[in-house]
Amino acid sequence: MGINIHDPEPIRFLDADGTFAPNESAAEYLSEIEDLAVEEVQEWYRSMARSRAFDTECTNLQRQGQLALWAPNLGQEGCQVGLAYATIPEDHLFPTYREHAVADVRGVPLLDLAAQFRGLTHGGWDVNDPKNGNFHLYTVVLGAQAQHAQGFALGMLLDAKRKAGNTALDPNEPGTRTDRGVMCFYGDGTTSQGEANEALVFAQSYQSPVVFVVQNNQYAISVPVARQSRTPLYRRALGFGIQSVQIDGNDVLASYAVGRRFMRDAREGRGPGYIEALTYRVGAHTTSDDPTRYRENEELEEWKTKDPLRRAAGYLRSLGVSDEAIAEIDAEAAAHARVVRERILALPASRPDEIFDYVYAEPHPRLQEQQNWMHAYEASFAEEVAS
Ligand SMILES: Cc1ncc(C[n+]2csc(CCOP(=O)(O)OP(=O)(O)O)c2C)c(N)n1
Ligand SMILES: [Mg+2]
Image (tube, rainbow, N blue to C red; front, side, top):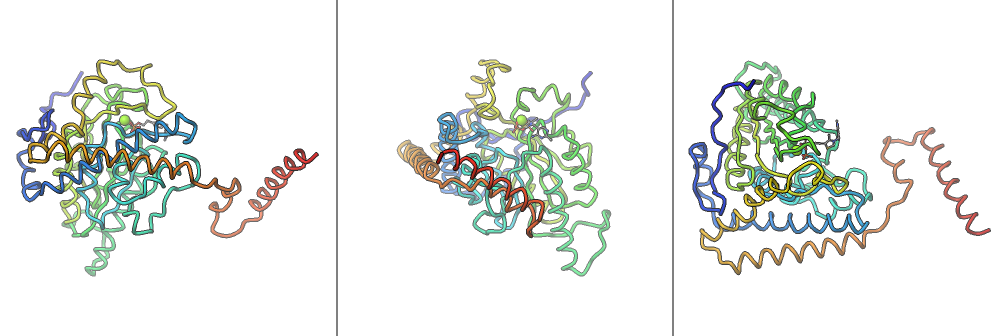
């Protein structure tokens, strides 16, 4: 039996063709986009187009045996780009393994992303390097990053309290401004993980400056969201006492406006937030998955009519941007993806024994033994070839 609560309509600014038509739920967020310039929206579209072209290229590269695996974000560019632009440079972002557009907006080179899926790097990028925009490492262990993100946000809160000469961490104390915050991404399926829920408990207890973003792309591999939750996911956070809303995740404008408000609230000491972005994974879960085995084509086609790029392009046109200018951005994105492709193919192979380098900070006798064994094993093939 369902629970009878009235859910407001998901927050939406743009209709299916990109016409600006905010619904009732969007009214209180209109002030977030008051000063928005056309050039900014054009930048968002550029990021969305870049992401899509790159994603398509990576799927192709995997099919050609050039990447070991790829997790497409096709169809999820609206919420990824809108939310990424809603952050400030001082914020820290904790992703899953599918936030390629967020990574790009924050400055992580797409080549570094692809290198990881080619099996050439262990972590992917150096989070301490400012050029990577405080974008943390991809996390495949579902929900682990929710705890990392919450812990990191708690650290920000402690730093701010100490700076203000207050070392007590009283959960009932009014909020503290941290001037920076954390955005944490995970998927609909991950809301079932203990860690995702434990992070919510800590976030509400300490009122830490963290915003959880659930990209509800309707599936956890082959399991539809309806099988995991009988209530809309955003309601779960309400149960923890966390400010929570549902947005149209294929609407880049709604994603930006709500993300901006929630992040500002978090940074200014008004507590954590939770945003459920309704979207759709148009591609496969990963290149190892065949979605035709568990979902109907009609459903896919229906979601394609809500394509976030088409909607953003429609909005740009309504702001006076010409078809030629939009086509130019698309062409630029395709050209960029081709350059990334060439660079991926030219990446040097990694040393097989590199796996030993990052286990401990200092040399370790047992690992040294294993490394020696590996070298001897590899050398045995050289002898075979010689004889
Ligand atoms: C702790 C854990 N359990 C299981 C898996 C295997 N697994 C990888 S992705 C995935 C589905 C995740 O779905 P969702 O959270 O909706 O994210 P999406 O892939 O749709 O973006 C599963 C079960 C895992 N990586 N980690
Ligand atoms: Mg999912």
